[in-house]
Image (cartoon, rainbow, N blue to C red; front, side):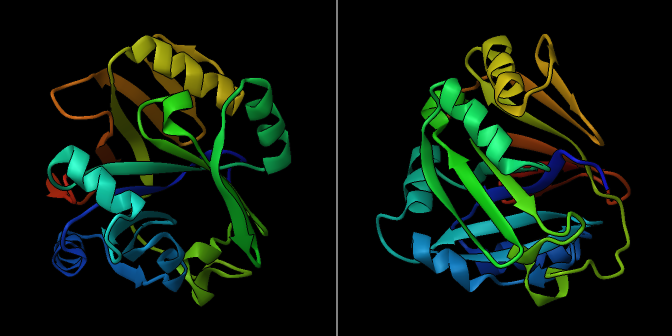
Length: 225
């Protein structure tokens, strides 16, 4: 288990049930529906890639944050990247020094996290989360609380996000994550994060590498395998 890595990615989808069925069919098995996302006016479906996760998040209540994101995108697309850290307080102190605002902070037994304001970071919403013990991931339900069940398949090994200024946004993420970047790329243990030039849609997560499952589009995000 590495101390810091991409542990979960989130796509905003218009139809959670249909997107979840498709994700399961292409090799991302269903794990859990988290009732806690109701606090954000949302519904979800969580799917495993080894011991990392793809979350499909949809709108439950009109005017929810995910609903607004879907409106901005004009359809399904990447929404959030959750990076697991070993010392959340250290990172939040660094975030405050950098002038990055939080849009949410909270937790449940065994895990806590903080969502950073996308206007202060770029690319997508970045969440920093600390699990105890580190191999657990209670956002994914009882099976991942206090322990990790046996897993199969490859984890997320790389992601790509769009940005109007890829090098600047890469440097910003590197500063937040207390690491270095090489131009438009950040290398975390087990995961490469790359920023690519923006297209005609808002900045977002656009690609996820999960070895062994082939190439598919899930929730408006390209899965490379």
